[in-house]
Length: 99
Image (cartoon, rainbow, N blue to C red; front, side):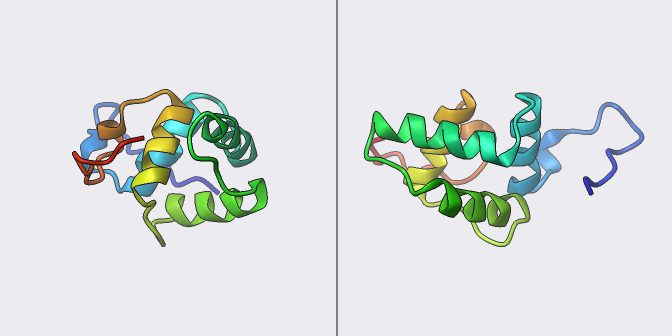
């Protein structure tokens, strides 16, 4: 069950956890975790690849529930799959990382 949104419509996303920002970005596309996992695989094929869909589903669940954080490659892969800026996910970005 998704947590209820704050009653105020002007709640700032900057106060959300990474997992909540990721879930909101995914739901803004109206995608399930499975759809995002498939998109990550497709985008990953143009780069250095991506894990299998089953593994991505496990990782997505852990990321959205703030049990784990993605490494730099997966952070960039998520952003590319969701078509958002990496910085919008508000995790530290290594300026020397090449996606």
